[in-house]
Amino acid sequence: MRACNYCPIKRQCQTIVDPERTWFDGVSGGRLWRNGRAVATAPDLDLDPASDLDLDFAPEETAA
Image (cartoon, rainbow, N blue to C red; front, side, top):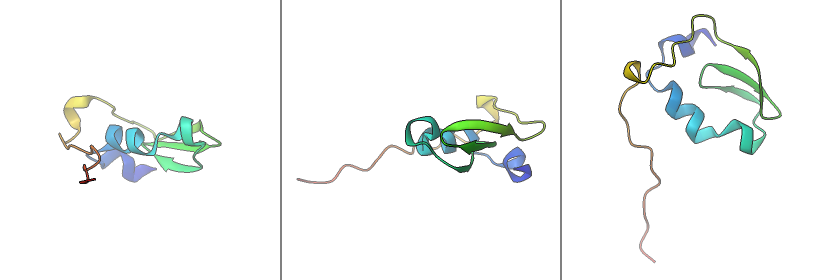
């Protein structure tokens, strides 16, 4: 989780993984998740939106 402290897409990572809805087990957005619940948080985690890159992770539209 220390790598999350330097990751430029922490908030987007958590949004994409959506751990609470998917009952995720693993690391996402600077937190360790078990069954969709945060059980640990990276030390010195900065979730300030200004520190994240402005990336668009919207799903691509496909032609029908």
